Image (spheres, rainbow, N blue to C red):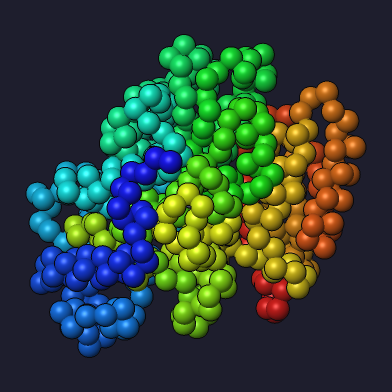
Length: 439
Ligand SMILES: [Zn+2]
């Protein structure tokens, strides 16, 4: 079983907690007097960072919200008051994809960029990647941090990195075959897109040597039906990974795939809270992930409200790691849930239903409000050669069966729905008054 950092990955939990506290105290010392964002935040809360001696002290620190980091950036553009050091200390800048709201910039020093590579080392080794592997990255590199950090990670594990930028999907498939790529890192959406392109171009997917895909950027590898569909199309194993630009690459799936992802607890502190009350969720309960990164003094997040819903499992994994697991991966976003006629609907639940239909290529879900009632509308693109009406009826029934809500399913002309290469945006809410609001 390959580990990236065996001593810490298999350490008794008490030792992990001690290590976390030591790293936290060092971080607080390193940013003390330099980081304007936290200096103000803690001054306002009446807290002196040097007094943090235990986890119960730590829990007195106020939460950090993404909106506050965005505001901090607006107050001191372009990098904001959370950039601890002077600008010349930084060697990297990235920004969030900005699909919702203002893009947030993050900056890294050489040390914190190394730390990103170190975290990705865990992700790659977790999926069994070694120096014998050739890792294909099918992207044109933009400001998004995710797969830049993968490049650093491949170097750490000694694998060969194959850059696949500036090419279209079919060229990438040929390149994977010619260069013998064994691992592909991409969003689940793009893995399915490549398979679709292969099918249209009569490219034989079994001629590839890819044995593993590592997914990030959106849910999918943790959605059973989506994962099964990717694994079938690629004849390869899918691995889930979670991270965020402002947080780091924090969780990965091990080779045993115990139905969840391990948090790199030597580099992050995770808490799970009730998103409404902010209080710690009970053991094994689903709640919002609050995370503290321990290796990025130049741009730290401390008790950061990720908005991701998780269920933490502290029991040791059969792989030998003692790192906590999030059962089922990131289960959704605390703000993604939409209530339709009294039913709580998560986008991942709908995706899990639709992905069981091999005859559906792409889909789009829209929540509309008509006469103060919300409705679920689903558009599907049906693979040619299938009876579209037959597929449509079955999708409608399957969604109704799964979530007890009857959607309106319609068939879109082939090629009219947006096909995604990075993060997909398949769920839309057309703004209208909520069910309980008056117009
Ligand atoms: Zn494991």
